[in-house]
Image (cartoon, rainbow, N blue to C red; front, side):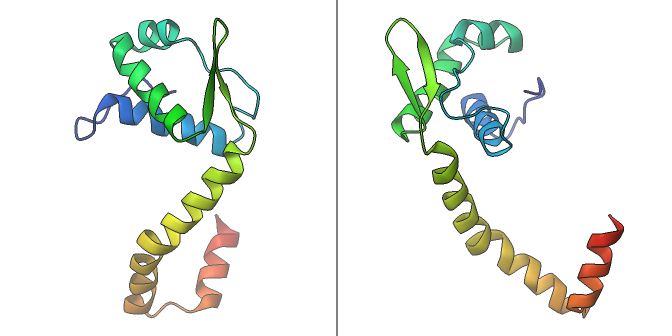
Length: 119
């Protein structure tokens, strides 16, 4: 996880989003344990309660589970659930803006495919 924080969003939400990105990217897999609250707090110089709040949100969303005395673990199905939610969010929030830009610039599907192959 990056140590840089965005001043426009609470740190606990940024921690949550970074963990979600790690699950989506396959860095954290189902059954893997999350780093301890103390470890994350010390490494990123944040209050342990901030990390705990991020972890609690993940637990409330059934993405992780707390195992007494062992820590927090990624739940089975967490990645699939996140992919579904992120795809839905992308298509409803980001895609309309992208398609409007494509139309405004007069880009063709071939322009987009050619550009994608070059990058």
